[in-house]
Length: 327
Ligand code: PMV
Image 1 (cartoon, rainbow, N blue to C red):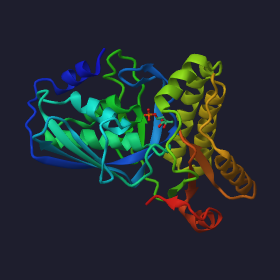
Image 2: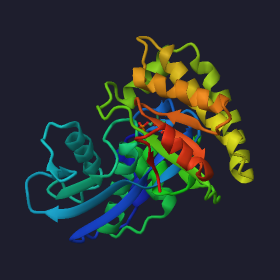
Image 3: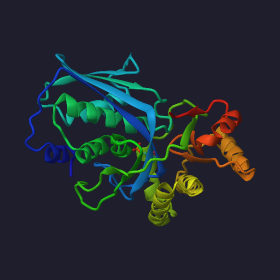
Image 4: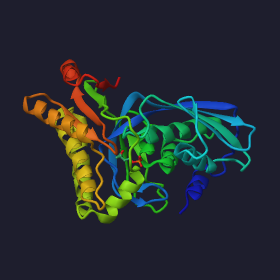
């Protein structure tokens, strides 16, 4: 099935009423149980469910305006993007799905307050912000589930960035992916804190799409991944319901390490870690041995996200001087 068919199903008979301009913000999200592997490459339908937490005020703001021009105009962090940049190409083919006529063009301005393509889910909040802005721009009035499915067509993990707090993305079983959407988990855990430990701001060498495909195709360990995800999802939900930080931290860190182990066992092997990533991991393990409750998770990039409780924030910031704590 094509993306355009899914869009047609969701928009149905809705008219796209063009407004002049619309702006929306979407928070970045970090998976505590990762999405790694697709059952449908075109529609970004995952092989397994996943669970994330959103990053408060860290994310993407997107403004869409109608322009009288022969092509779209893209700005990222106030810089005009070249036609051949990967940002322009991904965004422009995403907008193609929603143009009322092929001659409708847009200016899309995106501002990110997180580093681009460094494993900090910039594409997740980016596509979610685009979908939220389009919903206002065209006055579609879609429900959150529909918005989540549309965001997924841009980037899988974007379906979780439609919501804030803890979010579960159901893998679903339908071929058209209509049951593959994210949903918030009602929970309030004010003591939980997340910090971004940035060891490199360089763009990642291999996109997550290619890395996932290679892992599923070549890692002999991949067969064990769905069971690991199922048991981690159960444990994370218990941890969230009971505010059991040790269980949450252990499960999230172990899940991330399993995902990276799948990549190391792919061929050619994939490692997003750089020496500084490993140095930081060793430091976290040693602090934990000394009794500090600190855990990490890592996505498709070298940076780590630290999980800890607010009561330990001062001591953790003393150990990691450049830690950016998420509000
Ligand atoms: O949505 P994508 O294609 O950017 O893939 C995201 C993959 C991970 O960030 C590594 C895991 C996840 O669940 O977010």
